[in-house]
Length: 132
Image (tube, rainbow, N blue to C red; front, side):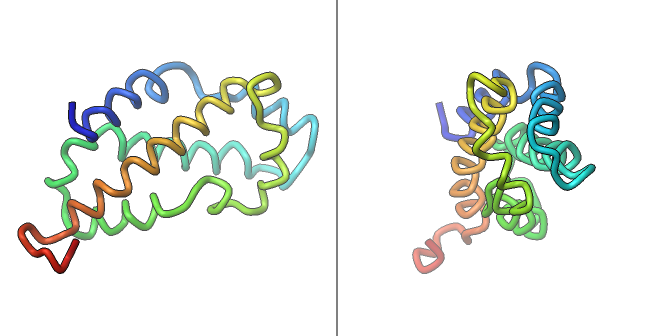
């Protein structure tokens, strides 16, 4: 099984299943009120963007250069790198307190790290050893 197929399979078995982890997010917001209105929409955007890229990992070569460059830019950062204002929540996210959110962020991070080299490969001109 190719790396792209493994990514698609992990996506289908994890992020594609189950509802958004609202309950865990609300638990975090109760424990540590933060910037109002940012945790849930930022998390939704991040997870859905990782999911979209993961769902079509085996079709990366069919994307335009602009789409691949946008994917590369997005995949170059973790959730908390995108949203440093939410870092105070990181220590509260664990398997016991927020199991669904913890699992979603772990899976999203693995998918992000695994997708990035595939995007780089898709951006590399075929047969050009200097581009590798």
